[in-house]
View 1 (cartoon, rainbow, N blue to C red):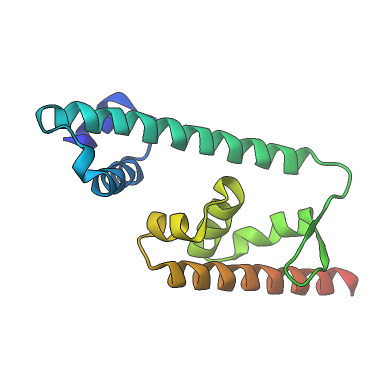
View 2 (cartoon, helix red, strand yellow):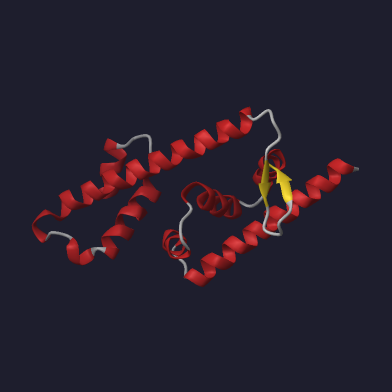
Length: 152
């Protein structure tokens, strides 16, 4: 029902992530769902999930535009306290795995807590922290390698 609703009403959205988000909320708030208006409640939650997804997409696009239009070299801190040029990060990010890109983008755009990140990914909090830490390490290593290549 919800997937067909999303497909009909919110044609610009990917269906699976929206439906997953709706049911994650429904599962968390199961006791709050009005028994006589469950469909309306789910549709209302769907509306909020879609709006949040659109807002997140808009923030990500805005961040991408800002990164592309940046003429002045901007630096961003890296875990070890070093500085890496954002242009290098932008060049290296697409070379990482899709899972690494996803978790890094999620962290940058939404800044979820470890609990939220675990819930979004459907894994334990410890696994979410580990996955994020490893993705950051791979990004850092790729950036360092890119810097070394440019210095040669």
